[in-house]
Structures are given as structure tokens and as C-alpha cells.
Length: 109
Image (cartoon, rainbow, N blue to C red; front, side):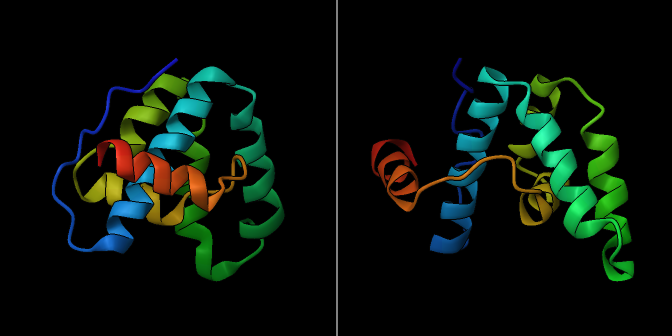
């Protein structure tokens, strides 16, 4: 499965472009393997849940992970403040190698 991309076309800097490329890869993987949603939940429970300073992130992502993978992917890639917040606070669903990000940027972003 492939996510329609890119939804976002203007980036402030290279960091934002790389962050968006990682989000595209995560979104594609969530669509291909919905079981990765559970990996995100495990990450939240292990590393975020007990941190009082990250409770808003825990609540945001706990609610987001209740959605179907396609909607999670869509929200993660949204070109708005909400999408940017999700990208900045996303739990770890899967390992993404730097060369994957570079290849995606070179090909389409």
C-alpha cells in the first residue's frame, strides 16, 4: 500500500523535510502492517505514560491510536498544526533507516 504523497509541499528547513519523509514512511508501514499500531501503544506505555511532563502527548496518541490505521496515517501527514504536532510527538512504531529517508527525499520531496 502506498500513501498519497506528498500532501505537504513547503518546508521551513531540512529538518522539517526529513521529519515529513519519516512520517510518510511510518504512514505507509502502518497501512501495510496495522499491527504496528500495537507497537506504538507499547512504546507509549513504556516510555511516555509514567512521565508527568508528557501526559498531554500520552493522551493525544492514545486517542489517535484508537483510529483506523488509514486515519492515523492521514492525520500524521496533515499539512497543519495538528499534523506537525503528531509528527513531533510520534511514538516509535518501527525502525526507519536514514538511507530510506534520503531516498524518499531524493525521489519526491
